Length: 263
Length: 340
Image (tube, rainbow over the protein chains, first blue to last red):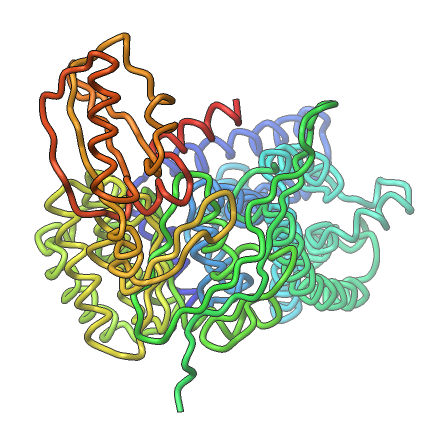
């Protein structure tokens, strides 16, 4: 009930304030088009266009985690809602999940639009090898990603404006390290390995291997290994989120920062 | 058998560290010191004190938003620091001037959302919301966006949010803030009725409005600089002053007026000054009525002409002045200038 309750404002907001269609759907498409044009100019293999389209779609989920969940606690604290969430019996993870679920309406529309419009516009060809593996990869990637987002959100319990700046700071490096617009195989191995801690890195890599003909040749590691790693990341991040949220809440209570800026 | 006490604190203290303090400035702030309070089940308890006295800090500890630095606090028999998750289903809080909820949502939607955090089934939640909105006079605003509400109406919505979950212990931090006189009266009436309806319910409210505390509360704790100065029924606190005589004397503003001169008169417990238009109102708390003669003698000595003299019954404001030595407004101004 908590998840549905907190998701509700997001869903209503999606319906009542439709300006997000321009800012969160149409404009990001321009970024995708830009990268596609670069690859076309370089005469890259056709599948690279598909990589960009899928990467552009997955960015929507990253933005949802970063801005509609992780850093949302900053705004809730500013508005006074955080205190009311904390004093209620509701679990903070459920509140965060509700925020994410509510944001998924817009996120899914954005991702779907990018895939459909991008695929039609640039005539992307798909060669799906296993639907069930694709489903498993996507679900595990999302669980791990949202778990990571919850872990990150715990710092907003303790910090104020500083956490907002940190979120701004990580947005682009994560976009680069995850390989939204290119295969991470071209990173040095250790860079790609470190980047693999970000769920989207391996998630994207596995999805590309599953749906594009040249995917397997441009993959970082095998799909089955990526699935196992994503499973491990899911468990670690969700467990870690539970632990960190409690720890940070207690620390913020001790320092008097749950409801106000640092004294 | 129900626990006798809804709220209990034992030597409760809270010290804030002040970051960025320069050399010579204080590095910590004592917000609460050795607070020992008990609030009985079914009681409407008031915390009365000026801004900065520690009222909100105490409420935050009791509602599991803040950890104490020393001592302990129990709500509904549960230690708030050790078992906050057991306390939270039993409590709720309403703060004056809060802007909770989301502006895009209607009044009903906002309230329904908060009801879900307390696992109240939708049908029951909607029934409670409808009833409470009717009681507080917001029935015709049910489907209005909360961003379109005035401050006073928004506060009424917040009050409904607090009562909607039917908590065992409800905390209200300056609930009348932002409300006009009529709305404040309605809210006070509603609060009183709510507590009276069910002996299980306890309400702790903080206020710096004497009238509110006097009218509403079964018992009142007067708090200042983080310490409880007195705790008893309002009538009992005022009766302690009834052995004293309180007189209000109005005079014209005059440069000869010397307050310190009155304090030196034997039998004058306190004298405070208020200015209304161009007149000065002096309030004397005297050990006995007979001292009035000496006061009038002093006024004559100062060549001050009395325009009005009346005896009045003691109020909680007088109790506060007796305990602190200043009126609440003066104490707040003093605290502000110390902070600056």
